[in-house]
Amino acid sequence: MKGALTGIRVLDLTQVVGPPYCTMLLGDLGAEVIKIEERQEALRRLQVGPIRQRDGKEEPVPTFWLYVNRNKKSVTLNLKTPTGVRLFRELVPHADILVENFSVGTMDRLGLGYDHLRELHPGLIYASISAFGQYGPYAHQRGYDLLAEAISGYMSITGYPDNPPTKSGQSIADYYAGLLCTVAILAALRYRDQTGHGQRIDIALLDSLISALDGYAEFYTLAGKVVERVGNHSIQNGPVYGLYEAQDGYVVIGITTDPIWRRFCQVLHRPDLVTDPRCATVMARRQHPEFMRHLIGEWVRTRPKAEVVAILTQAGVPAAPVNSIAEMVHDPQVKAREMFVSLEHPRFGPITITGSPLKLSETPGTVRTPAPTIGAHNQEILGTLLGYSTAQLQEWQAQGII
Image (cartoon, rainbow, N blue to C red):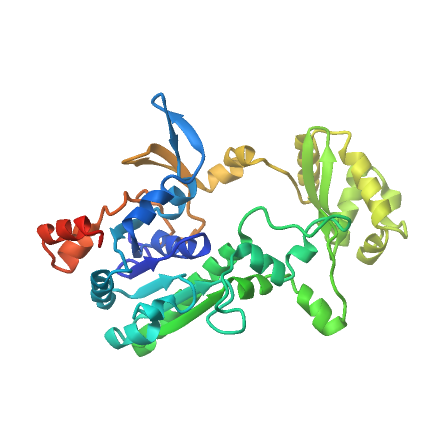
């Protein structure tokens, strides 16, 4: 089955989290993604990850690398050398998309900035992901997800009111930026289909996270109110939308409307609560958080989490267990959605990695090939596509150019 992006070629100069996630999604959709990196740097990344036992030996497993580089081809190229830059420029006319996340100004200094490359290829879609964007007072500062979480206000609304601001458990700004960059690339492809022109895409981790704050910025800009963290309950819905401790773990419950509240009252066998002025309406439930926490908490804590979820789900009250990562992997819904796939890797043997979330009826995202070994496609891309001989490639490899 062909993917929606079959025939589209991507030059992938990305590292860290969000940018390679973007190119991974393009690969899932069928694009030919050529990951370009310096050989020794690439080999060092293979040493980053947990240690496992295999065939009686310990080995590091580059878990994120194996996940985010599926469906990609590997070409080694040292862009700190004139020959490396020249070879990259030769690849550009053969590509549709370039994605990079070097520090702002680096690509221009190499002679590989957008203004340089669009002269070679006016139809090139050139996407850059950075912490703060390509312009503004912070543009040239180094930055990561953590800084975006801090500056955006995200950390200020995450955690408990009596505890310090809290970062996300994963690199949330990176993933937002990767997703938004993917959307922008698809829009740019559509524009190119209509006009023949490429364009520059500038995605910032900071912007991406600000755009996903649930409208809490508008609490301030429109109403003058500063939202603060409230722990594991909802800022807008209060404790009826949050986390509770069961006998053997935790569950989350989402009571967002009055009809759902009435169903919950039936579960509790408390019809009096339907008209109780402390909880009869959405506004009343928000205004009596301690009463609501006690009421829901007392019912939940006397039962195992599976029982809580089963009873509430059957009654039409949204609820779910708080899974560990291990429990999530074996969750029946996760399995039904094929969110984990097994592949055979030439170096790491059988591996199970996260599947594609892109479910389309005609051109779904697919995981076709495992992450490539370093430089596995030098011959195909530099030899066959650009026309260089095997002897020349061997010479360049000995010189540290590829």
